[in-house]
Image (tube, rainbow, N blue to C red; front, top):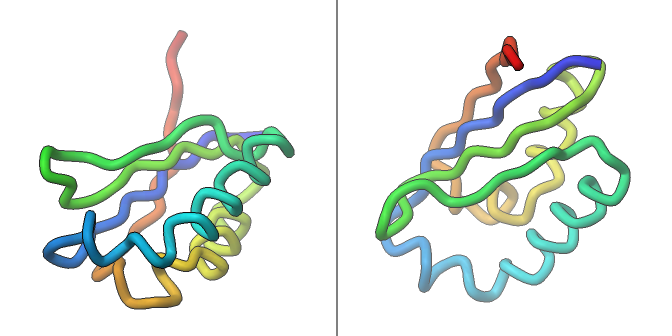
Length: 90
């Protein structure tokens, strides 16, 4: 397993615009947490302008699978995204 960071850039007014999609987004997030593939994540900024989600998976393709199923992505709330390998030093 390896760590990967998924970065999202959000549309303007994300807090208001995400409301109808938030329950499904959080359901996906929680399912991946329960499966121990998603380590942690959350919005960045105040007000939010993006998000960072950390995964513990075998490949970046799995992170892309999450993003491809995310209601925020599917409904145009994410303007850009990128996946980066994360070399964790403990």
